[in-house]
Image 1 (cartoon, helix red, strand yellow):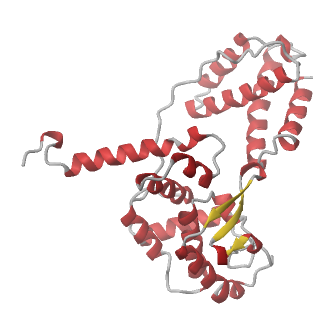
Image 2 (cartoon, rainbow, N blue to C red):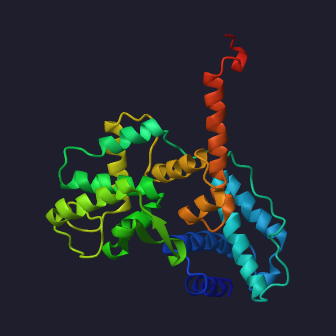
Image 3 (tube, rainbow, N blue to C red):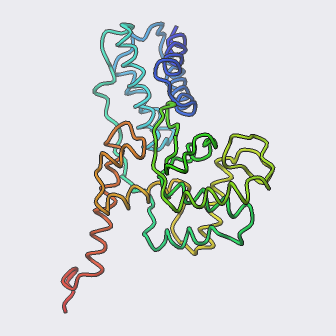
Length: 302
């Protein structure tokens, strides 16, 4: 019966919430682990038999297995969302997880490039000007210039482009669409790729914008490798990933006075609290700049 409720919840996430496939799979993994624990250790047939004590015991079992605090926090969030659904569907009378405490996790700020590093990185993406290099330059300009998620970048279709209006139609998480502005450098790089390079890669799909050397849609792993190679060429010492360009986009906008709500819309964040992480980054960067440059900081004297 417990797994029957889970099956209904997964269907709800797909149809009603319209969540991304990866997100749904993550929920399902977490909840299967939770339900397996309940089935193995208790003889429950219905979720209204579960109390806070059983949830706490499950969390302790995760800690005993040396599960990281970050993973435990994610699992608790998955269970909380599930129990909230059960409450809304009147399958339980109260939310037993409402007072369950999440483990303290160290807040780590995303890796961000400064303007000089971004310039070096984009310049290094040029390579020798071959078809793949023109593709890489277009991807990098677009990823940084519009702050796209990796999945959004790789899913772009040619029909999503509105180059004459400097706009692009993006399908984000949960298939939510948003229109994002394109910078002039992005438009130039995309046009050059389309005219001089994409045809030479013999694309198997006439619609997908970015393809690999075999003409198939470029994968996340493929893009990650490209980012690493370009970072090495640019002599960037930071631990870069494709998301670094998105983090840099948001941080540079805020540092130059952009409104937090505007950045939220550009990034496609549902909750502004997700966007607020970038205000912490800008504060840390400003503090470091002050300490390194001001003559009276850290006991410095003129």
